[in-house]
Length: 209
Image 1 (spheres, rainbow, N blue to C red):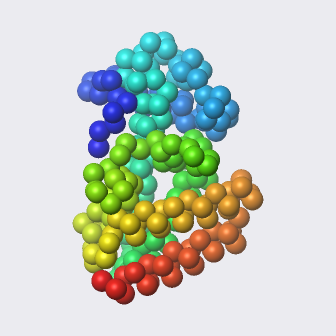
Image 2: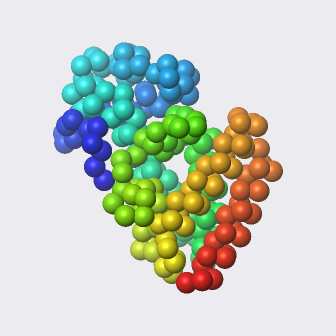
């Protein structure tokens, strides 16, 4: 998946390691200072690279955040593959629960994920992911999760899938915003309410297919 904020995609191991170090520094600083206070200068200092090195690879702060969001998306898919491998007779309601469970765990353990999972979750905040291709919204997160469900998890097709996935993603984001506003580790009762909502929704829509 391409990031329009990438000026130059690294190929040599030294450059790849440098970009990973920049993203790691960006993620840690997001946890420490927050999105608004994050600066290229501070990221460069933490990553121990010149500021110009960041601009060699990224189109400034937005490009760096997009690449971090894409990395987080790939990490989520890796974790979901592990979870799905241990599931027998997977259903849509159970798959939705696994996505929420892994997202919660990443918010607790992955640096920067609480601040930049895939979007600025404040009202009116922008997404950090590049746009998708499906005409029903162009939401790349919905597209990737749906394709994962079909191609790797072996789930059956859904009716109007991208609208279903986009609504489920927004509902999950709202539940988790409430959960993590109440507690740094996430309010377990609110997380369970989010699970109940998703299970019921996907039980309903998957029965219509």
